[in-house]
Length: 367
Ligand code: BMA
Image (spheres, rainbow, N blue to C red):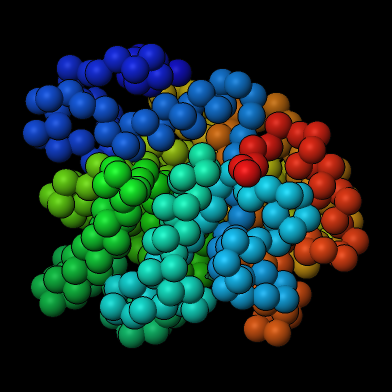
């Protein structure tokens, strides 16, 4: 824990801004107020210190295996009795002023669920799968590489700025009933070490990628957004050198994360465990050295074909790692995307195991 976090945890206001002071504007630096982002950082840090971690689920209250938009519903809650401690959401399509995100979740619904989750003592994380601003395709369309073009193409650059601005406006609009900004973890430009996104490897140089982060931070800072905790989350199988080759820098990032999925069911267990051990060991170590938080930003076994996955695969894989949260991906409605779910629903064979994970582990869920 660095001194800044200690000071915040102790409720002491700070005289100077330093690395990772997300969204701290000049005015705030002068008055040395603790920002909502700093409060969330301190909370995440004390969570790690206590040996606990938030359990996260993407789009938790929007839809589940066999339902959608039922007030208060959640597959996690149906099985465990509680909501996940962290809810994850995605801003893809906000850049086009769409009413709904890429998976159909209305942004108005998302905003109210983020506020509700904050009200129950939970936390929220937000990713972003934006369209490809050069081709008009989706995040996975790598037929054009906008990051190679940004420096020369002023129209494209203006589009990029306005798109980032829309995410900043959405996030800064999140306020509780008293009008206080609700802090969120923002995890833009994720899985960039993979080749599947237009901002990823093969479609950008490390320099261009880092510039994109700096651009993103500049736009948020210019707007005075003070409720963002910034998460960096490349994908699996990276040496520390590779992981840090696209790292924007300690002044731009608060959370060192990584996305690692479990593939190939039972046969893939060892590979999954090895991948976690190899990467999250140095990620947690580096986070400590730099006064940052570490997190397992995305994971899961699609379709949960192993009924003991939570207690026998996930838990032992992350045991002993100082991470603030682990987040699994969404339970798509089976009729929309068959078999695309990561937590059990009532009646699924992994139900009892997930309940045991809830009851007996240090994972944080909320009422
Ligand atoms: C992927 C899948 C897609 C979804 C995308 C963005 O992992 O779940 O169906 O559209 O994430 O949420």
